[in-house]
Image 1 (spheres, rainbow, N blue to C red):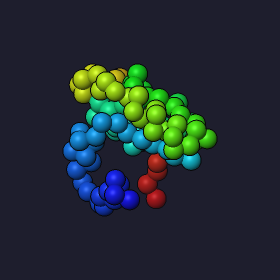
Image 2 (tube, helix red, strand yellow):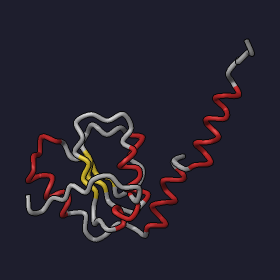
Image 3 (cartoon, rainbow, N blue to C red):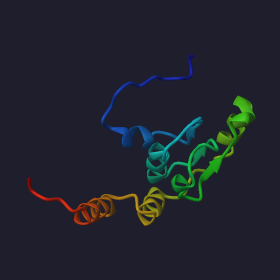
Image 4 (spheres, rainbow, N blue to C red):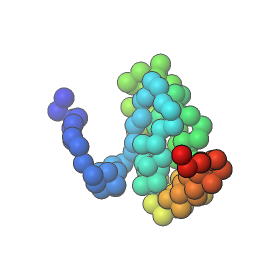
Length: 121
């Protein structure tokens, strides 16, 4: 309890990520794992459960650890994240190459709307 902070709501996620050494993501169920993608974009090594889909595993600093390994196994995996991940700009570039950036997302949405057959009533 003395070592955990429940930070609350913020609109400055990137600043919190920049202050971290590693990102633990022990999720039991995940649709995509966008939080893990954001952590990688910030240059953090990510230790995630096997529930995080392959699409979220972008940077070479992403490591999967089964939940069954328990707290000790997770602690060991997180401590093994040192030395720090590659430069933040390298990690951010890997995330962009994987298609997680605004222009690409806008293009996907626009293409989706262009393919719809919408008629005025």
